[in-house]
Image (tube, rainbow, N blue to C red; front, side, top):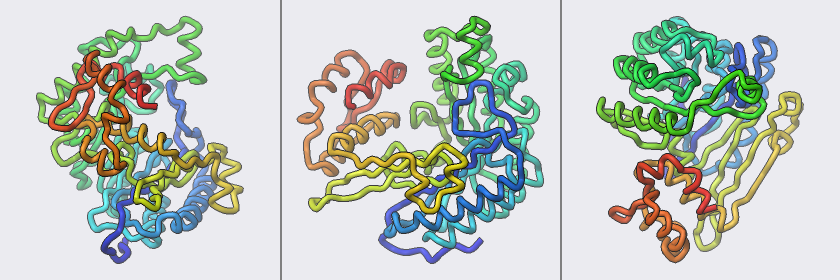
Length: 395
């Protein structure tokens, strides 16, 4: 892989590449994914991705790529050579930073020592492994295709292949999961060569098999109070082991925060390619104030493959109003545990935060959901539990 010539004065850009294919759709999954294992369809889809990567280049003329993220679906379920071709296509068309973070999402059930070595050789330097649990009974309930042993071996195999930036996902609030079960998975995780841990509460999404089971009374969801106890258990446990809780659902060892995901919460630019992928482009008014343009691709595979240009791949386009820009800055920034910098808010928007949001913010502080410290505003521990309620005050 040969990087394009690095250029000075470029704005940072993240590339998100969506691979929708997986071996089997999980019981709880409502993501844009398809249980399709057809190599010819994979190749056709990747050809269209390559075309889109080229077409969208003109939207980001003053940018340098510092992160590339392959998400899904299960990117590790397609041939590694297709991933390599996409990396080559990106670096051939965009200026790419020498220290670019390149992440690949992978399922333990579709990883091998050979594929891990191949990913490392092609330039992937961060693995995000969808472990979800280190207990077979939870994995079976969730409909995952791998076992706890395979999850453990995948993490060790990634280290053996040369990866020193490994992230895993874990799920809590699984029906039948006791606190000791959750603590067991956390304890296994911290003993592994894992630098980043994302932990998510199991969501019962409409249209999924799990939702149907809950509606029919076959499954009893975990009560909210139990869910929140597990959430705070994870934060305390991981902090004690040296991980920093830097975003609502993410902890990392110092220096291993996800560069790509931080873009979403910091309103930095990113280009999304593939089925259902989103892009965010910052435009500036004459007085230098930011206005974001949001793009969303179609989630219909046939329409995506038949699209003749980048515009016909889209399902939605929205140019932020002043109000949109302000509210997004606040509620996305509050996802980070460091919160938002009130001085930076004034620098970006040319107005005082308290003049814009003083009434609602004072109310949330009185309710113990927000706190102000050193000209920063952030969620309290209690606020983390009702974050969506807090965010709704700024929409």
